[in-house]
Length: 447
Ligand SMILES: Cc1cc2nc3c(=O)[nH]c(=O)nc-3n(C[C@H](O)[C@H](O)[C@H](O)COP(=O)(O)OP(=O)(O)OC[C@H]3O[C@@H](n4cnc5c(N)ncnc54)[C@H](O)[C@@H]3O)c2cc1C
Image 1 (tube, rainbow, N blue to C red):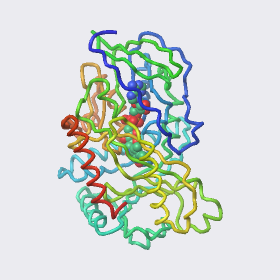
Image 2 (cartoon, rainbow, N blue to C red; image 1 turned 45 degrees about the vertical axis):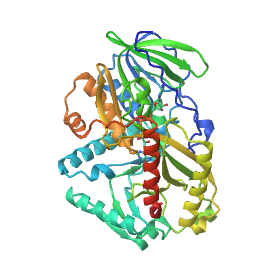
Image 3 (cartoon, rainbow, N blue to C red; image 1 turned 90 degrees about the vertical axis):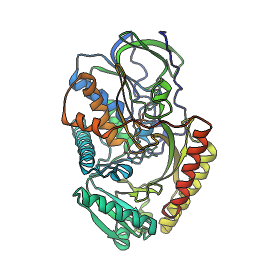
C-alpha cells in the first residue's frame, strides 16, 4: 500500500434496530465482483453515501463508482433513526441571529425532502412516506419556555405554526402527558430502514454496491487513492479510485481527517410491536404522528403508520461507536417507564427492541461540508439530525467535486463551518461525559 496508510476501525457489530426483523438486515449485495480501478469510491451507504451515489448516476453516468459499507444497508444510523425528515433548522441552528442563514438551511432541507419524495415515487420505494408534519412538545415549564422561544424563532423567519394546548395534544397523541406542543406542517415521517434499503436497491447502473465490504486500509497516493477492502467472509481485495467521498459521519477520523473535531455520540431508541385491535380500542389518539422535544435533551416519540410506538432519548459519549449491554439494559427500563407513564392504558404493549445508534456532534455545533484534502470530500457533524442535511450534502459533495455551480451549493457552503477542536483524552472523555450527564440532569423533567 502507498505511504501514510490508515487502518480504519470496522464499525462494530452491535444490536440492530427494531424497525424490521433482524433477519431482514442482511447485505443487499455481497457477490458482485470488485476489480481494480474506479473513478469514485464512496465509503458509507447511509443517507449521505446513497445520495452521493444517486447524484453520480445523474451527472457522470459513464464513470465507474464503487459504494461500500462494512455493514448491511440500513444497519447504521441512517436506517435506525426515528425517521423524521425535518424541514426546519434544528435547535442550535435556530438560535442563530441571522434570518438569511436560517432560510438557506430551510431551502436545503426542503430541497432534500423534494428530491427524496421524487426518488421514492420514481423508483417505487415504499417507506411509509407520511407528509404529516410534526409536533414539538413540552412536558413542564422548562419545555414550555423553550416552546415559546421556538415560536419566536419561527415568527422571525415567517414560518407557519399552530400552538396546541394539553387537550389538543391529547386528542392527537392519546396522552395528556404534554403541557403543549407546536405543530409545524413541513416535516415528513418515514420508516428510515425501508427508505435507505429502497435507495440502495435502485442505484444507478454505473454504481456497484458491496455492503459487506469494510475499508480496512486507506491511503492517498499520487493522483488518487488506494483502499483495501475486507469482505464479511474474510477475503480481501485492493482498489484504487480517482476521487473519494467519505460518507462515514462519526467514523471519518478513522481515515485520518477531522481528528479531534468529531464527538461520536450515542442515542437510544425502542419500538413496540403493533398495537392489537383490543389495544387500539383503548388508545384514544390518532395514528401516524411524531413529536420531537422542545428541550433538546428530552424525548422523541412516534406512533407509526402501522401502530407501533417509538421512543428515543438519552445521549452518551461513544468513543468505541457502540452501546454496552449494561447501557442498553438501563435504557430499555427507562423507555418502558417512559411509555408507561405516557400511555397507562397501553402498559403491557411489549417493546420488541431497544438499540443505540452513533451520530457525530461538534463542540461548536458547526456542520462540516467540503473537500478535506485534494480529491477527498465529506460532510459530518449533523448534530443528531442528519437525514435531510445528509441527503442534500451527499448530492452537493458530488456537485462540488465536479465544479457544478448552483445556489444550493453556495448555500450549503455558507451555512457549514469547521467543527472546533476537542481536547485530547482524558479531558475529552471526562469533559464530554460530564457535560452530557449535566444536560440530561437539567432536562430530566422533559424526559
Ligand atoms: C436513534 C437515532 C435517532 C435519530 N433520529 C433522527 C431523525 O429522526 N431525523 C434525523 O434527521 N436524524 C436522526 N438521527 C441522526 C441520523 O440518523 C444521522 O445524522 C444520519 O443517519 C447520518 O447519515 P450518514 O449517511 O452521514 O451516516 P451513517 O448513516 O452513520 O452512515 C455511515 C456509514 O459508514 C459506514 N462505515 C464507517 N466506516 C467504514 C469503513 N471503514 N468501511 C466501510 N464502511 C464504513 C458505516 O457502517 C455506516 O453505515 C438519529 C440517529 C439515531 C442514532
